[in-house]
Length: 282
Image (cartoon, rainbow, N blue to C red; front, side, top):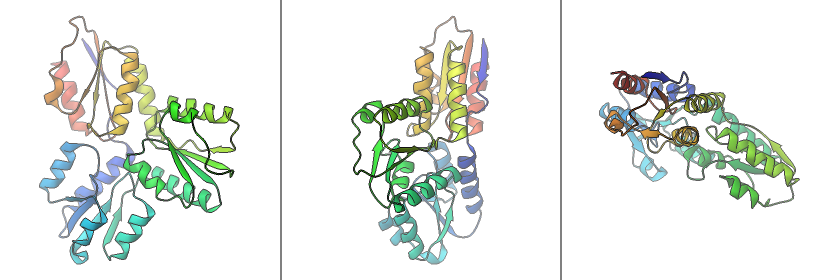
């Protein structure tokens, strides 16, 4: 049996930068809190918790902290302009680890909306990255999550529209939605803001799944980009499994397996990927 791991599996640049920053900060003397879990991976979050790193999920929680000895870390997903300004206004030291690719989206929607344009975001409405992007829009904004909602989309105004997407959005779905919107003859300025790492990871996963007898997709259960990888792989490989830890590897797979493919989301640590690979090779 051959085991192949996708080259791009695991931490992307933005996630690695954010996680490394928090680990470095945990070595200092100040109390460290991340605004929301630093990444959607319980193993990493629990390890940071053991190092004294806390999590706050709202401005009310932050108000109960002492700005004198507390650092608030903005995670790679980013936050809204309102939240950022509020935390800064309370006097806290802020370490902003928002992914640079997400930052560019914030700037794009802010500039476009201040210029009078309507904003259209492709992504999951409940995802923190999308909520953060919405928070930098200074005018009308809507979210489209899938092809169905694209078909029923109606602009809120008669103004030009700037379209952006969640950085981890499914690339094929992005193309399908854009085609629908263009065919509707809307005045849309399309900005493909899916990051290169996401596109590479999705393409590699699809190619590997098309050859594999079994695909293992590793990632946190709340990870949006890992769920998208699973969907892509499941469409190509009948025996695709979503696992979070080694404990989930007790799988019933066909006896005739010749090739096992492994991929992982952007918030999956390298050591976990290697452990899963080792288990299969043994």
